[in-house]
Image (cartoon, rainbow, N blue to C red; front, side, top):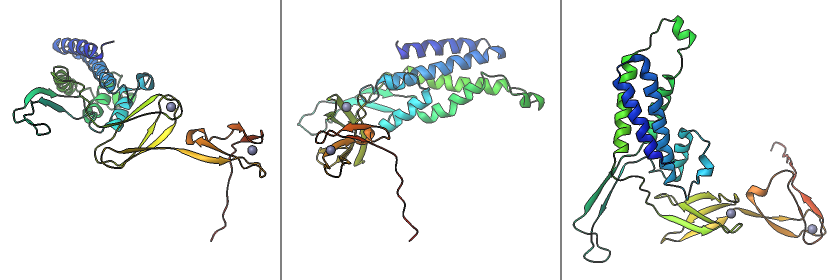
Length: 266
Ligand SMILES: [Zn+2]
Ligand SMILES: [Zn+2]
């Protein structure tokens, strides 16, 4: 499904509903607008498919999808512009830059501000609101819908879209061999990353000069047989009550159990 295309169709239907001037049709305008925002969020998520595979978010609400997008890339909800230019000398920025246009993206602030508000127009008023005789302010709803529709229209007519630039650390997972790709946020030295395939976790440490160190979150665990003490390596996500392994040295069975340690008041 082409999310952008779908968002465009929703927006068009929303504008038709708004154009009818009928108060009773405002809820349909709000519904179309909400769906348009949802489609744009999924479209944005697709741009990050290496870091955030669709299988992870297909069943999520757009608001949750956007929160994760922001977590992957703090600039995910910022507008950006692209320009190119020919360098006369290698490494020296070109003097003449040609703009390729700017991207207007659906940002989290706007999403938070409008998404729920639109939702509230889709439900009946509560009995309390009806008892209080508080009528729906159709003019307010209409101007809100128009404001959001204008914003969504700008996002959709942006000549450049879904630009994701950044520095990435890439490595094959030590456990399953699948590639892991992680964006290194600007100015951040330590980042946690998890393999989408097998959930092995790593800590990435920026050592400077494009040197990223991958530290697997593993622990050495000894066989609980006092006469054996053979060590195996266990991933952090594997440490769970009930999980067990057969010791390769003494063939005994070791099982993780919940335990409590107590220290008396000092
Ligand atoms: Zn893996
Ligand atoms: Zn053992």
